[in-house]
Image (cartoon, rainbow, N blue to C red; front, side, top):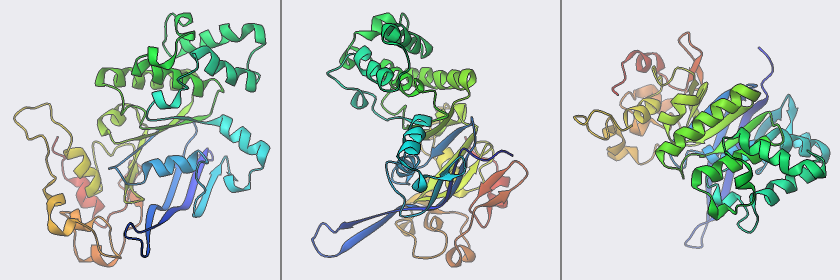
Length: 332
């Protein structure tokens, strides 16, 4: 197997802040000892509840945060060791698409002026050909006719069109990978499907990879080659078959809590375990999910499970009873 394009080893991101009452300090482990490989040309989804550490992980991959501990490598080289020129080259190779496209576009600039600055900064086209170059970029993300969008301001575009502009901006530099932080959350369902189709088409046409941060497991099932599930700063399961055969109770809980197309079924299922009094917080040590887990046994309170291979499909799960969890059918 080839070397992963991005590799995280033992990565931690710890935030410390003064308590609201003014006395003492609070510490939050947003990312807590994460090991993760991102393969060349794959679409990797990172899913979990709000506060699980997904967006912090994206910031570490984009070099917007420096990890408190551990190491992030790009093509085998530690990001912390990159000089100014290499850091600039890294940022060309690893681009970002953000959650709210409107806030990532300058409201006082037309599309042509915004994207034209990037063309000139990176010498992507001769001055006389900039407008034609930009039209080709917009056509590549499904904005047709592309010339009609060049002189518009962001407020003159729909949410889906704004996100396509953001994706075109990221693709202009021909990156190896795009980190997309909740790229669908501000869009309605029909537009979400169009953006997913666009990402799939771009991947097939250019082999660009994606790391997509999302809370929408249904959308990620449609596009991801592998999915990593985060809970309280750690990856508890990762694989390509977790939607059909979840091997961690938290993954199962997320999947069974999805809306059902059958009106006879309840809207929220399998969440009763989360409502138990001991679900508020797990004590120090042991499995951090055990207070919400219907499968918890004595060993879960004594030892925190490590990610390990479960079955023959390459799934990794951090659960002492992963084989038993994976053997049970999932109620959808």
